[in-house]
Amino acid sequence: MRILFLGICFLTFEWMANSEAFLPENTKKCIDKLNDHYVSNIKDDSLYDGHPIFLKKLEHLTKNTESEQKLLMRIILDAYNRIFTQMKNEAQDVSVQNQLNNVKDNLNKMKEHYFPDKNDLNKYAIEVLALKESDPLVQRKALFEVERVYNEAANLAQNHRRRRQAKEKHSFK
Image (cartoon, rainbow, N blue to C red; front, side, top):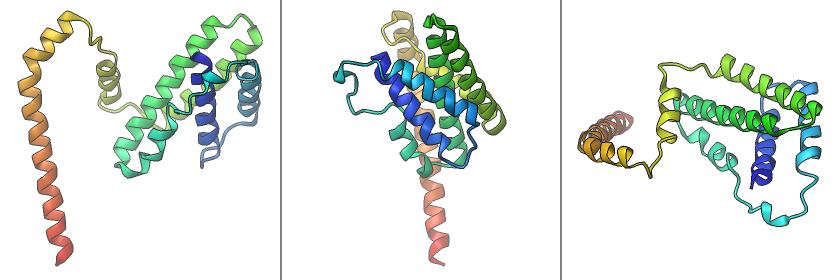
């Protein structure tokens, strides 16, 4: 499963490299070497299930507001950082560790420069995504808070509906 994940990660990073951002040549070479090391040694075709991890989300990225796009990209780049950190910790080959560090460093530079962490929104999103649904304490707290959260969501939905209706009114004038 990890090999599938790696392949998709590398494909997504390749996609990012072909966008407007400039991917340093040494990082491109590191990605190629890591692909050779991790992906070319796969003998089991079942690891490729045809379901990308990030690419589908990136297809829908342009439909969101700029702040939503930046948040999603930051979350994706954070996920890459965690994946590559895990891979580095498991790697026994020093050159593989160095290549992973190179890729991580460039991802982190991009993240910090273009997708700064504002208002701790990214931190909150990661905390919510990391909740353990099977934890009885989390379940009890969720039940205790659900009514208020539902009402907040309804208020946001109502505000969104009002803005959309106002926008439609102005577009007909």
